[in-house]
Length: 247
Ligand SMILES: Nc1ncnc2c1ncn2[C@@H]1O[C@H](COP(=O)(O)OP(=O)(O)OP(=O)(O)O)[C@@H](O)[C@H]1O
Ligand SMILES: [Mg+2]
Image (cartoon, rainbow, N blue to C red; front, side):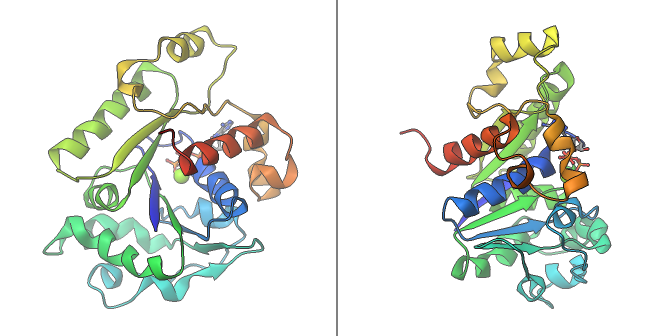
């Protein structure tokens, strides 16, 4: 089972939008996908129509008292299930920090899913605490949306720093440009200059799009209500790039 985490230190950069759309694209491409919404805000679950909370407390999960699998919900889509968030997820950092081996908590919790799913997608809250470290360790790929501004690039530096300081190991950090507004000179300039910190990044760029904004009206991934839109094409291209990386 592959594990992809949509992660950033920064809030509001397009983690959830990408996680929700890439989940559907990967399922359409034949993967059996589980989207685990780790953010107490529960936006990813909400986009998939999951109104029930998971009713799982981080303390019970971290200690192994409860297994997350019991709260998985089917969706209207083939090969696509969601493990919804719970407001109690605001306590992840404390619950994980209290464990003997905090970095291994997500490794342990996600392992049983490999029996049923070929791909686990994690939608992460913006944080750099114990949950983040455990996520970065568990994920094969950490996908980091970067709005083309100096501050976002600085936040990406922070992700690389976190990965090296905490020796989280094998995760491949893959940044990608997100919410790009090509009418803005500053965005265009950063896109063209391709800063060093983006060297390992994805080729696919996610542009600023009214269709992505409209996801909250439709409560669906973009391809369901605007399949021919540029945004739908970009998310499809990103899934293809991730599923068939260049040799
Ligand atoms: N490519 C895009 N074009 C236009 N709007 C976007 C795009 N991506 C995200 N948005 C909008 O920006 C807001 C934040 O996006 P999103 O929730 O995906 O960010 P996030 O990084 O998950 O935020 P948080 O840190 O709060 O979890 C949302 O209102 C979303 O609709
Ligand atoms: Mg989010």
